[in-house]
Image 1 (cartoon, helix red, strand yellow):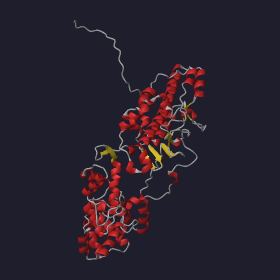
Image 2: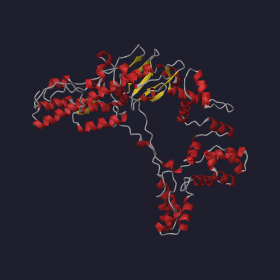
Image 3: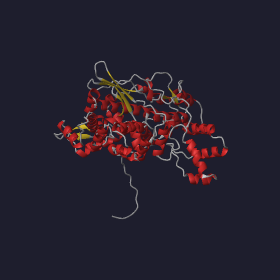
Image 4: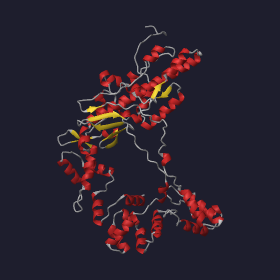
Length: 515
């Protein structure tokens, strides 16, 4: 065979990730808030997109829920976004024929779930008449303004006020002073005694415990503010590590008080704030807006529908397209508008695709976890992405993207779709029919209901679970217990004997001691 250059023609098939396909994939994993922001940006950049203010969502909901009639392949991103049906700008008939739409869904399985959706695409991300949540918040002063105001009222001399401002600027986010006083005095050109005097004055500012240099000093300042810092409490703070170790007997002996007194002192410490500056943080909790709403039908079956408030109302301005196609325009202008028309069509199709896919996945999740919704978390079924993907004939990666940052409102509360995918634990007969989340809940219930005289060890919990048909190892029980922030049986027995009940404030103090 002669070696010489030549030209060969070969035909092959391959999947190309086009920009339109990338857009469709991106929209699948966006949350409701992110989707609203993305659509708003697209409407700013594309003059052919407009908001549907008619209140009729039929144009975009005409075919939602009818996926089973067209086959599961119609929900494939590759099949839907194929790029072969875009029309040039000057073909009016094709523009009218290609108008995308969604419909109310009548899809259900076994008569158990109705996926109909009479809601229209919501105006997510579009400003309405009502003010946003942030504008309704009370205008509270920040920590620095609060301290500067007290400094101006308490300090008269300019030098002391300047030192005070320097100390305020060196507070950390928890309200602790992370500053060497000798170094600060040298930097400010003042005596160390003067800096210490100003610091002692500012340590009496509100909130109590501010300007402390460590945890013990922070707690001491708060106790002094309450006039509860006596010799016994001083000894208590000096040995605060014993409280973190739950060695209550030794702590009681050092303080020289009775068990009843030591329990009262523990209660006082638990009521203190180890990070006094955090109360001034203005953290706005973002409310979760469900993408899917699940409700009970009169016949007892489940209804699954999209939340119209999370679906942006976006339409292609067909009248504007028709006017432009009739008017004489330059070649480059027509090319630009044609590209904008294709982009607008792709966006509407991608939104349609996203809505159909979310509804399809949510419907299957409700079908798979029917026992959970009816009987509770102990009946949560182990489930993996492949189970849902095989049932609805999609790829696992698509199901993963759809269930990320998507929430469903159910009669048992609002859950992220990811919540329903749990690892399966084997039963005594070898079948994986126990959800890890259900087992974790069972462990928490057992520990919450344990008696003072009968604290359950991890081995004892294993025996109880195996008696219930759950084949679980002791290290698995310990791992689940740690994930629930539940101490070991030894620590729980010591806490119950000392009458120490924990609590949120106490946990914050102990966490600060341990750190």
